[in-house]
View 1 (cartoon, rainbow, N blue to C red):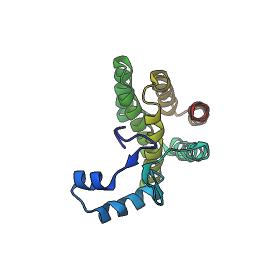
View 2: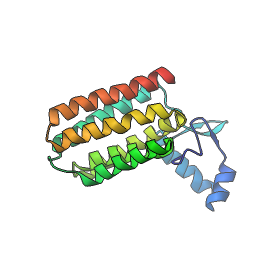
View 3: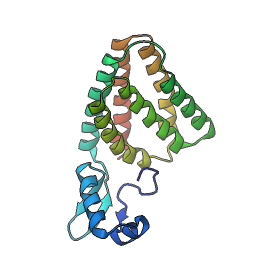
Length: 190
């Protein structure tokens, strides 16, 4: 799922996956239960296990969660250069120039993960990792839409400049607009 080989709605074969991973089907079922609790797979009785297909309500909840987490991280982070985040933006620019949507999506996820990491809270990091795992399903639903991913490269750079300058209120406002744009796109294209 992480690399887009298993797209939302794809049926997962217990037999095939357990053989590929060299684990028992019972162990795999336990893993599916964990992934289901994380909203990454759907277990449908008498039909099987499928890669989750987030719906509009889940997208809305994810965006609220991200706004809370990332706004809090902005509030807790100090001003000054953020070289690790800036390096991710450069990777995103290179991916955009190469037309690599999956690399842009990965860099975008890294940007937001590092943004939250600036807060210095392992609990916030854990919550953000969960949100980003669900977001990854959405990104791979739109893996061929270059313009969707490309627009966020510059928006990430603008957001970072506000954070580095210590403009927390402006950064939070920009983040709210950014997430609304992303949410609107997903809602319109589901």
